[in-house]
Length: 72
Image (cartoon, rainbow, N blue to C red; front, side, top):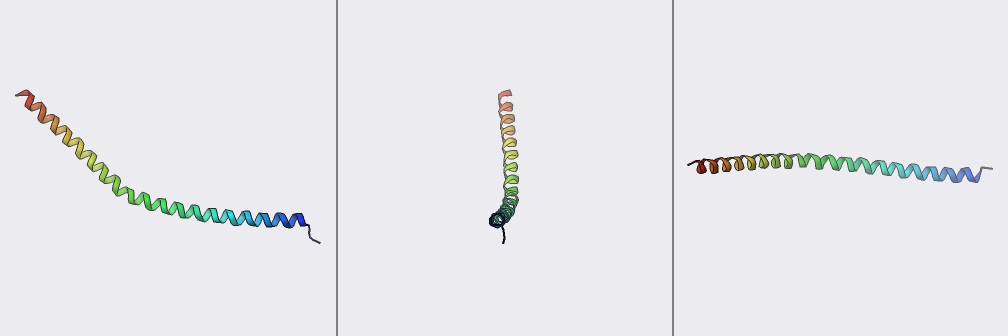
């Protein structure tokens, strides 16, 4: 006759393993989605960097023009 306590533990361990496998699959899917988001955001980051540099250049040129007008 099999030990009922051992049988209950076996069932619980199987449930834990099944749930751990589901968690692993979900984390893998989440990582994949995050990689896609990071790839998509790289273009946005590049555009934002370009706009920031453009704004700084415009600000510099405006200040330079203002300075040259004040010198006159």
